Amino acid sequence: PPAGWEDIYALVVELRKDRTAPCDDSGCEALPDRTQTPRDFRFQVLISLMLSSQTKDATVGEAIRSMQKANVLNVESIVAMDASELNSYINKVGFHNNKTKFIKQTVEILKEKFDNDIPPTASIMMELPGVGPKMAYICENVAWNRQTGIGVDTHMHRLFNALNWVKSNTPEQTRVQLESWLPRDKWAEVNLLWVGFGQ
Image (tube, rainbow, N blue to C red; front, side, top):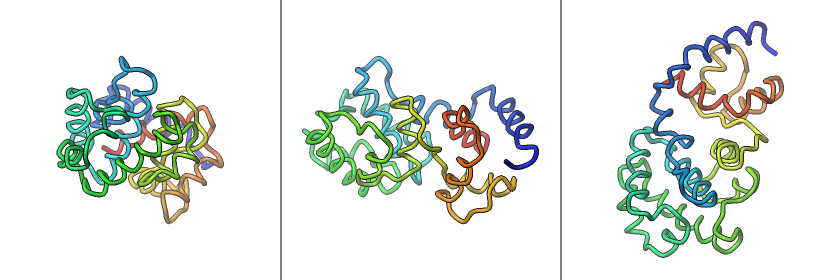
């Protein structure tokens, strides 16, 4: 492990105690409705993440909340709606046309293969259209409370390189290096903690 990492980590934990970053109230931990069935909750985690790439948390929050309000943020409803209706809910999100296509393909897969639930592991989630390692590991953590990897985004990748905690060219390389030394009991919190710190 890098020398002195524990002190810096503890400082960031302290700085993040107030939980006032955008990701704290509009990230995939905060947005899904925990009063729904566990299956619908897990689906909402996945969709929050699928909408999140190249998009501000507040914009994702708006899209998710409008779908929740209309009671359509579940596999069955999105299977039943046409692509243009789905697009109308998410049209402020970056790359919404691609994401509409990915989500429509994903709900068909969830219906056929997973009994309207999300896949049970990050590695299977990565087979879904538009879902990469970062989304899959975060989804597995939030939806299933399992940590088989760390979700690393571009902000974390830059921060950890600046701190000399890793020497890497991509978020995926950062993830592998980070997992080689960061204690496993930190894996669940590391994404929200550091993304919020960056914000």
